[in-house]
Image 1 (cartoon, each protein chain N blue to C red):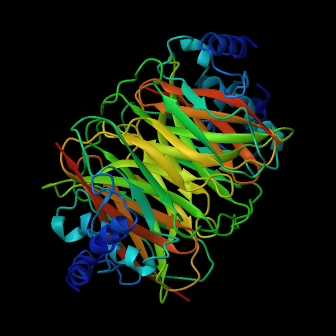
Image 2: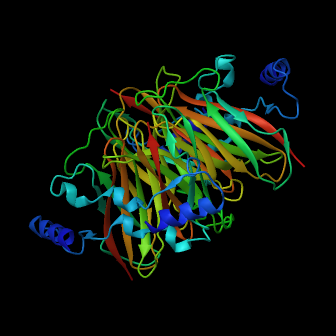
Image 3: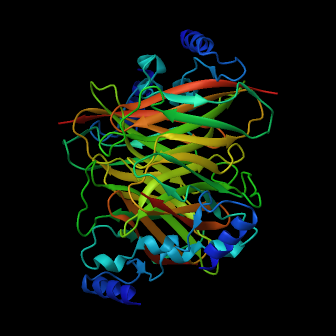
Length: 146
Length: 146
Length: 146
Length: 146
């Protein structure tokens, strides 16, 4: 409620009419991302991340991320996986780094990519995927870097 | 802990060696997205969303989203806003719809876009932005649709 | 023909079997991009670029690019404009700079964006757009920078 | 010249002042894409496409595309490969289909991806890549589909 109230307050101070001001919301992006547990054991949307448990600092290694590995996801123009994003967050950092964003052509590409990655420190790898019908799903794995 | 344990269990059952299996994590993507409150009153990273409070169903209206509106963000090759994503979530739905993803060329484009949008029902609009140094930031507004 | 022959030659030298080698092609990407003239006077796919004829160096100005301005393009899940890319090429340079890539959600976003841009020299602005059915279309305008 | 003249003509008819109208250009996007021959034998920018020469219709097979395979390309924040796009054009069609667009995080990801693809007919595969300093480069291979 705090954000909405603060913004409405500043809008009023600035003489902005209520109808014209954009209506602030306290909702957070993270709340609309669906967790892996929702499809536990029958993953159709959860991005499956394959990566080594431990790697050498600065040395390239491969990450593979795939949607529909356990239960195949439809791949039609009407219903498909649009993209997968990969991020890394180093231990102790509050910021994530984008490893890549991978868009897939419906019907002609399968939502799976393998990409070489180089890390400098222990990291959590996050995958976020978007289904044009069923929204956003995430997953994460941890990689030790020595 | 549940997810990690379940995955380690299934890895063991499948005869996967611990060192080769990817190390499941219980961390969620939403936890790495930084909230608007972090920069309250001096927003440099928060995506500012300008949209009408209420619109007509199916009628195009403009949404403008901008980073650095209150306090300008650097725009150099070394430090810049890479992209802004816009989503809508209809009231009562658990799924978000991607309105657009907008990538900006460092130094030559300012991270601000205006795009026409058509909605069918009351919706929350989410913006997610990525700074190449300071990670991910979100914001949201609500729009009434009649 | 030269490229194909050179590559086949090096494949043979390297002992690569013909069936395994990738078959080099002399076709160029530019040849698959459809010119504006194809729809002269009834543009449905051509990206329409609105920009000032002349601007000041380093000063932000707005570029608007839209598909379907003259004749509206369908906007359905089955047939829609996926994205528009904007590039600048400075006079005398052989390299283009990406101003931005803008992806549009089918049915919920109209393929039109306005974005602030800063240029340092006379430039040609290129727009490239992708229709999921009718491929790639381009357009260009020239901007004088003083 | 034809396009510029036609547009200037319609601008005059519409009473648009010359200074406000956008200055049409006859330049084509394809002309700014640099051909593989430019770096023959010492490819640093050319996207190298690895794919089978012949595949079965509708059966998934892997395409790998990489930049800097022969001569490594720098991978720094100041100078890196931003993305690679993959397209297919079926024999006899004038339209290309986007197989995927793959964005790489500078310094943390190497510009190489492997992705499963399904084709229905003989096709030319095009790759387009973008270096933030040296612009756009393309390459193509042909795949027989039976």
